[in-house]
Length: 111
Length: 111
Image (cartoon, rainbow over all chains, first blue to last red; front, side):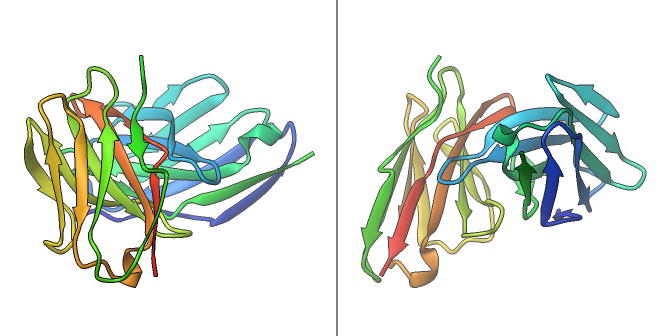
């Protein structure tokens, strides 16, 4: 099976700072990873994904880093804004197309 | 392009009753999966449907069942509801196993 865990359940940053959210996974067969943002009362919103044959991928203000050696991935958010406040989940795909989620990190951005 | 839509948004049921939740997949997406998200936790995989067949199942009892229709929409049925079934039920769709798009979910409360 797969288990996915986050290093910190909460993260508080100042507006304008960079945020880094970390995640560890257990199954070396995981081949695809996704970061989601979930606001209160809403479903998970896709942020960025990365395949296991890559170690870095960038989007608008976000970067995902994947270290397969230590089974670790991170989400970096540049110039964090109050609208970035939410719970962030990493998810790993293993057998078939099922996603295994971590427990989430609550990001709070202070003005 | 429409996203994933779920209905109803909220539902209250009595223990022992049965419930049906509905999901319309994103246009062009032929695979639908269902997740249960308890308060404060990450989503847990229930099962997945592809070409109207269940092709993956998580650790949920048989009273959780589903259907997928020719237009790729899907239903989740839960029989003999228990108090612990209270959760946010999320539907996600994908085409080709990447870029899973989630709906806003159905909040089920069992009393």
